[in-house]
Length: 207
Image 1 (tube, rainbow, N blue to C red):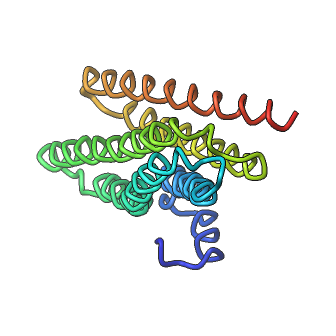
Image 2: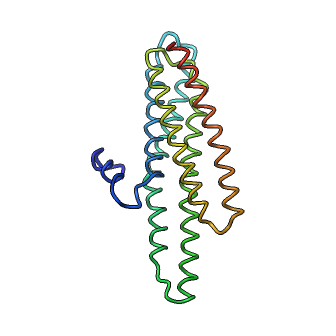
Image 3: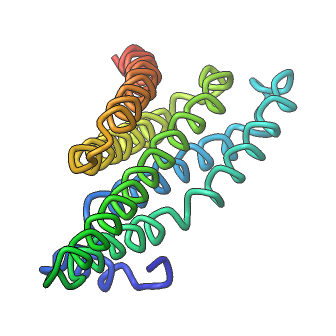
């Protein structure tokens, strides 16, 4: 998927197919938000105002590069995980034995489809955590890019959370499903806090 042209990517999202869907879109949006964070950090390095913070900025740049590398395959992973769900639903169910195998396959696939967007959600949180310590280094000329990156990352988190929640709804293991959703809600709340802090700071700078 990541090798497609932008036009092909948009067409595949708009197509009447189960994948790519919201989970893949969330992962790709997370990549864009992370990339914008990387851009503003790179522009902030070497500035006179940030001489004393150069080591911090270099460290954050390295962290964000790693986060972006790890996030890049997540859209493809999301598609593959849900393709397994579709395949499980397509299994035969002509007798009780086939039905049992099909139900088992559906549950296993749904669990996988729930886990992948939760990973995306946690990756977005990690990006915000990495960026937190150098937000004050970002100059006024590029704070709009900082806030845009934060907004994209929040959108990615919200999309990923919704995909965790919808896949969890189909699990018969309600304890596992409820624990996963609760855990995801905690991460989403943390992400919202990070995004709001950046948005508030940027609003003040641009007032």
